Every structure is written in structure tokens, then in C-alpha cells.
Length: 432
Image (cartoon, rainbow, N blue to C red; front, side):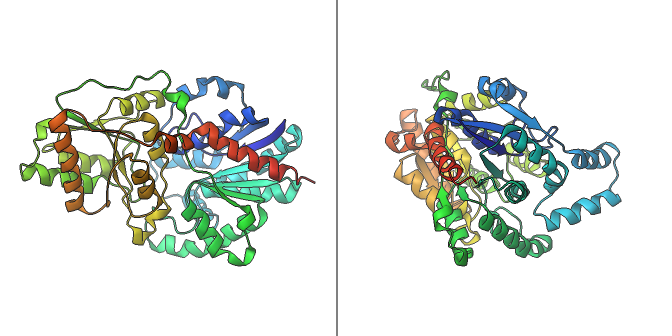
């Protein structure tokens, strides 16, 4: 068995979309003769947690090393328990995050020696680092240099040119540093995988002189058929159109344009508000929650707190329509976004109402007949497309759904992990 050290900040009990990719890789790698050993934080800080994920049988069987994060714990204690608005420790962490990609770089500096010990103790054959947070790749850079063990980078969001990052003085200052560190990472790694072709293409073009083509490969996100095995698809008619959004709104993502379009249709009396029920399920910060509540007096909106993963999937399968939102225009590089939520939604086998920019995600939805698409900030177009869906539901009591199942099945987690296993075996053979 080939042994890989899988280094990830996003691992249970942390919950959310970013957890599922590393979690499912760990689940299915043993099916291809590869033993994953996980290295993750001892006490991570995040918005959402799901302790039930720790009870998954394959998680219990996996060897997991946990380390840190002391400095982050100290920060949270000072800021949120002691209530200090300013403290010298904040400036130290802020400077480090500016120079080393993100706030979580403190985990790397605290635990890199422990990771080195694990590699020697477990006789690791290959290292995998998965981001974000992108400072995770400092582990790979350090361990590759110290051990000469092959290293695979997995990139879920773009390191440079991430369309979700707000444009501020700090982010503009940090952009050259991100490009500098990305060049160090990709030149030292043995393979680079990412969730979308645009991210892969941007790396290849940006670092053309490095001739990275042989290292680069797209392995998309996906869904796990086994997660839906015991969930029955809801087929009964109801007296309202149930629309569900699951997950948080991070970066530039917002439901505002969708809700404005619904309000426009209600105000025009094109649709009856009593025919709708719109669920938002997840962890929402105060500005998003306030915005949702500002529409709730006119639109039937239900806000549910974060749910364990199995319950979230059940909500999806019981819905008439699943709302997908990527609130970034094509001119903002929105085509790089290949959100994992899309794949989870097609696993649930319910029609999508997708607000997405021009690019691969829109093309995939249309090619697979997975739902209706509209440009993310075009309120008039969103309203027109939604009215067509509403009219169909009003006439027949259902939203039709005839997806291309052959295309859907290409995004099964087990099948995608087979691709990763091939990369692992290829680079592991180079071990010296």
C-alpha cells in the first residue's frame, strides 16, 4: 500500500462545503491501494462544525494526527472572550498573514516540525496538501525540501485572482506576494490538481516559463452516491413551490439579486407570494442575516441554522428547486468558480435555479440539463427565467427534471478519487 500524508485544515469536526473534497478522497483512496494518513488541526477555528462526521466508519478507521492551533486560539480568546479590540498580538498575526497568504499560516509555523515527525514515523510515500486556506501549501514546500518525498498540490479556489476576494488596499498589496508564493509552490511540487479548467489554465499561463503542463490536471468536485442511499426523493405535490439554498455566503456571494427579482415579480403580480417558500439553510453572518430579514416581510423566507450534513442533504432532496448562486460576473473572473455545491445538488437529483456567470459551470448545467440558468446580477433576466419555472410549476404542480445521467455519473466521488490515485501512483514512483 502506498502511504500518503493528507494535510488539510478542512476536516471534521469542521463542516461545510470545503470539507467534503478532502473527506471523500480519504474515504475512497484505500479502494485503490492507497492509505491516507490525515494531518489536521487539533482545535480548528471555523464557522460551522458537525460532530456527527467524526462517527463515519471510514473516519474512525483513518489514522489522524492533530496539531495546533495555539496562536489562533489565543487570538480568539483575546478578541471574543476578553473583548480586546486592539492588542499587540493582532498586529503580529496580521503581518504574518500579509506575508504568508492568510491568517492560518500560524498553523504551519506551529506544526511543521510535527508534520515532519509524522512523515518519518509513518514512512510516507507521498504528500498531499489541499487549499484553501492556501498557506497549507507551505507544509508541502517545507516537507518536500526536507524529505524529497513527492508532493501533490490540490487547489479548490484560485490562489491568485480569486474572484471572491474583495478588492481592498490590503488585497492589492498582497497580490504580488500571492503570485510569488504560488510560483514557489508550483515549481517545487510534483503535481498540481484543481477543481476547474480555468484555474489550471491560469496557472499554466501565469507561469508559462516553468513549463508546468505535465504537472497540471483537473479533478473536479463531485457528489457521493452513498450519501443519498437512504434518502428518498420527495415526489409528492405540495401547495407551494419549495426553493432551498444550503450553505453560507462568503466573499462576494449574495442572494440579494435573486430576492430583488422575486420581489419584482410579486410587486408586478406576476406571481403569488403565497405560492412560494424559500429556505436558506446555513451559517450566516449578521449582514447576510439582516439582508434576508429585510426581504422576509414581503417574500416567504425561512432561515434555518446550520444543519448536520445528512439533514442538509435531506432538505435538498425534499425541495422542488435548488438555488445555486455564484454572484461574480465574467469580467470579475467568475468563470474560475466551480462551486462544490453544484455537484452536491446534482447528487440530490433536484432541478437547479442557477445564477452563474458565463463559463464552464454554466455550460455544464446547460449541457447536462440540470436546471435553469441566469446571469447572477441581471435582476430582469433572473425574474424572467424564474417566472418560466413558476408558470410550469403552477400548471403541472412540478418542475420538470430530465438530467443527463451519464454526465452526472462522471462526478461520483469514487470515480474522481480514482483519478487522484493515478496521480499519487505516478508521482510516488519518483520517490528517491
